[in-house]
Length: 181
Image (cartoon, rainbow, N blue to C red; front, side):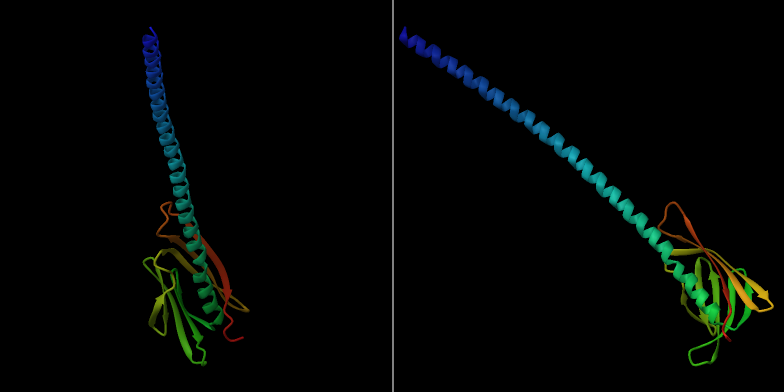
């Protein structure tokens, strides 16, 4: 009888070990599923954050391009201010008489050609005032003549070629010719 008790006790231990092994194996599977789902959720959060940062960076760079296009208006205004006469003016074309650093006469011409604003000095193409990623969509020069002098009203509209929303930025200025002052 003693022998059978030992066997019976041994078989209970075996059953308990088998149950424990199954239980431990079950927890491991549940833990694995938990960690996989946790990793998936964290991955989605990180990917969403990266996408949001990329969109923000693109938006910031587009806004910077548009604001930086103000340098085009500054260059046009500076040339008008330094000139002493308007040789020719039309909607998107302006030719000014001015002097270079040595005091010699020169002509400066601003010409809208397609989506580029070209600068010509003494009839020679100097370059585009806009960068390749900026399109000039509108340019208008209007002459203002008073008894005290001449001025030019400028309207410049630009857009970024990288902007899928096709937003534009308008720049306005009125500049008095002061070349002989």
